Length: 116
Image 1 (cartoon, rainbow, N blue to C red):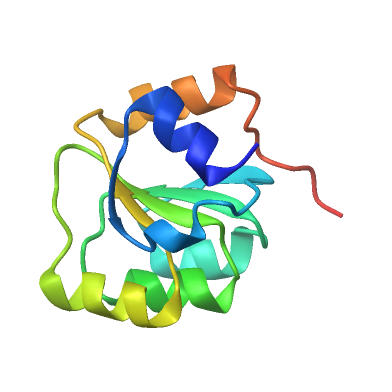
Image 2: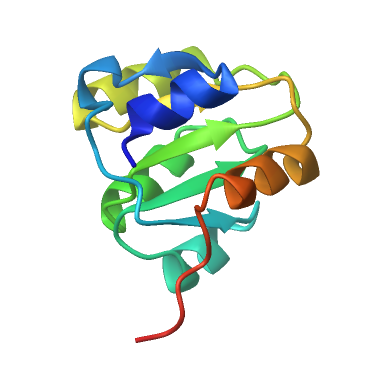
């Protein structure tokens, strides 16, 4: 399933990286702790968080994540969006709370992948 499929199915608003929506979503990861995402998220994962600052872009880029979804109606900082565009990291936003979004992603078949 592509990011575009997820955006359309869940009515997410794309804030950065719209040209990258053809990326495959291989799994999902939910965390607000950057060091946890660095250690635990895998390439191709869709990251769900409430963090807004530009360090989320660095973490997503480092792990080659499919994209970032910011929950709870929060809006990323302008410098975060600029960095995301520069590095080709898709950022989407939703008013849904984390728990609800994670459930919907799970229902769509996006799951946490078993350790390799």
